[in-house]
Amino acid sequence: MPESPEDFQKLKRPFGTLIPDKKVTKQKLSSLLKDAKKVIAVGDATTERLFGFGIIPDVAVVDGKERRSKRSYPANYQAQEIRCTNPAGVISKQAVDVLRGALKSREVVRVLVEGEEDLLALPLFVMAPEGSAVLYGQPLEGMVVVKITTAKQKQAKVLMDKICDNTNLLKGLDNNESNRKQGVTQQNQGRRSRRGKNAHSTTTTTTTASRHKPYRSSKEN
Image 1 (cartoon, rainbow, N blue to C red):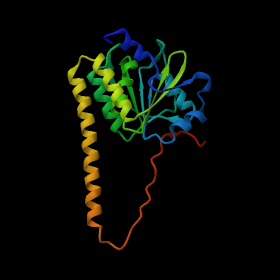
Image 2: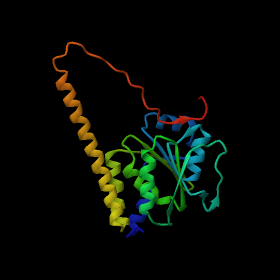
Image 3: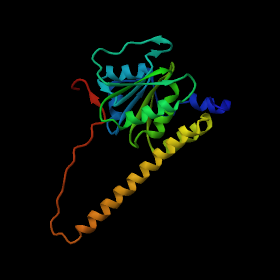
Image 4: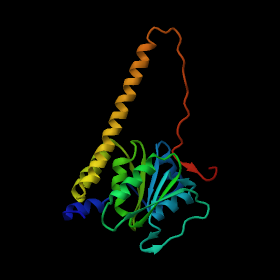
């Protein structure tokens, strides 16, 4: 749990852009998500609302409840389901490990949480690839859209340092960040090596790669 009232207030404040309920529209969300590397939804209501707009998140984290009322999933929402346990008011290592795997998957994934998913947005802010978007509901206010940047990842990590007493959990997140940096370094070294080999080439080949779609639509817009 947060170790001070100030930390608790930080958890209650929107971590990104708050869209008031009345202004949450398909057009607004589609505009915000068009360049997102991955779209991640936290909460049953948020997931269902996105689906209602024809936007299916790459990862949805739900507990089957919303404001303590049981929810049912849309009949045509198809996703690989992974389960984990996360007691109320904590962030469990099991949940973090499951979320890490979900983020690596190329399939649409629904993480079904036994307990509560409320705090699981924090490790998602840390682990989600830069350029992704994490969406969650701000109770009785609207929807929050968090664009993942290095600054957001660090901000979330600092807050997790304060509220988590599981050193293995935090170490896992550190390793995740280290692996990302190592991957970028290796990728850059590979590019420099390829440029060196082609330095005397008189022929230039241009390859056009298809852009990753930021969200999947269940129907044509």
